[in-house]
Image 1 (cartoon, rainbow, N blue to C red):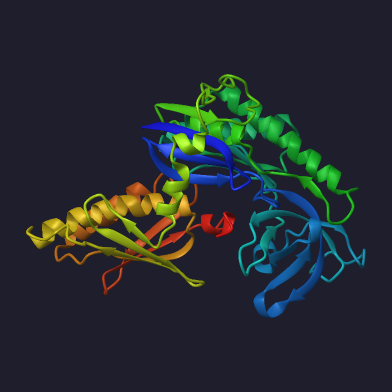
Image 2: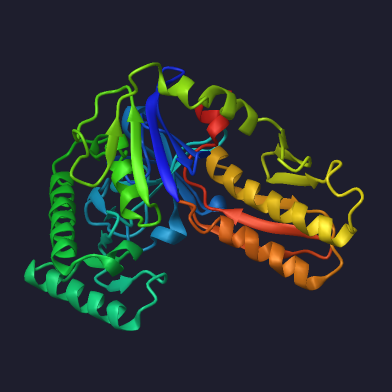
Length: 392
């Protein structure tokens, strides 16, 4: 599979568009405030026991939702209203927190005291434990990575910190993993030290990825034969950035026009999405969930119904996998596929949608089929839907 990453300005926003084998699959906005992973000082505004949460005042007037159960015993107090008290929260307490979810329409951004820094190969945190990604299948490599991470923490006198090797670490050299882990450890120590003297409501670490960083992550995934960047904006890394990226500046015209991006976005964000076979999807998002209805149109007329329904559902599953990524649909997703009688066909359909969401940058869980024939899916909430980011 080949990847083309288009970086340009769209609706006065710096955006990146990922094409996989010439099919638009992702869109990213690169200038958000309070991006996931950013770290700041915040003050407790109020504690609300009925929702088991506190609300914090952060930088630039932002308000964070802070779940108490998740952070119990992990609060990083910078200054307390009552210096002798170190348990529980009260209004006026100053905390060090990290953004874990961006603000959406009627929801504040969420924050946690479980501070960590992340690269494509390793996560460094404050747990005091080491681990590996469940996607690393080689047991010998998993054990070797744990040993290596323990050695690094010991060498850096950082036993109170923890580290988790991500999937990309499986095929990385030990030297490269060591360099990245030490760099993140140093950055995390610097953040924690700086927090002690940083005034309230200030950013200490900004985690927003640049287009250059995202392109390197694409290359590091190892699933693309090649990654080509097409941009009409300044590119910090030069010709290929030293990461095997091929960077091109279009000689004749804007990348938006060359890749037909406005038209593709209009089609992808429509409630009715047509399939090549003649069927279509109807996508309706509400506050509670997103409902997707698969319609055959004229596609299965004249065919054996079971065979036609399976073909239609497999095509729909592939398109739904793409739309979830492109539209950044999250939360509960209910999919009404075309009814089939054979259980083996239903299993094949479920397998197809799991396969089509395997490379999603957000966690996707395909639950099962209900008695009414509805497929239940959940997708991790990280950022607002694409339509909201574009102001539509």
